[in-house]
Length: 232
Image (cartoon, rainbow, N blue to C red; front, top):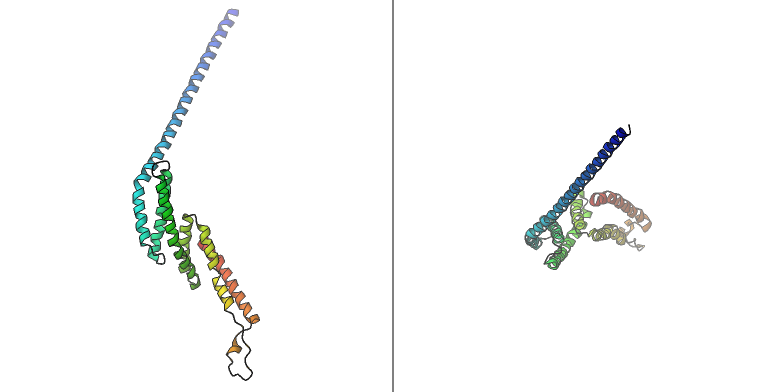
């Protein structure tokens, strides 16, 4: 009986040892597979980076030429040239992505200087377009008013200059009620023997003030709709 127990014990120990070896080998195989996958992932990222660099380098000169052509023909107060300016903003974004991909390669400072120059030119050309769009607000034509402003918002947002647009918008929007306020002149007291009754038809300040408040209320109601359409 002791002999049988001894043989069974040895047999069990042998099986346990074999299972342990198999487990170690399986673990080693999994580790090798993970290392291979990790290496392949890193290789893929490196290839993608190289591709980005090559694409940026190959398209840089062409995009710069396009920018010069677009900015040389822009007249921001016309619709067709506003489209050219929008295209120039998109091209500037492409240049900025390209410069980022090419960072660390020769010519980095020159590329940043070119981008800064193009950005300045675009902002200078965009300002009259914005001011013209703001002037259109008094026309009452919603499509004509909102469309140009939406174009400006899109471009200023791409340039990360939306705060500058909002400053101009806030200054221009209440211009009409400011003008109306300072245009008021009270009626002068007519001479007793004068037959000129034109001054008598002018409202007093107390009579005029409610009409001015009505204009303010209409502006606020319109602004609630329009600002949502323009700024989203």
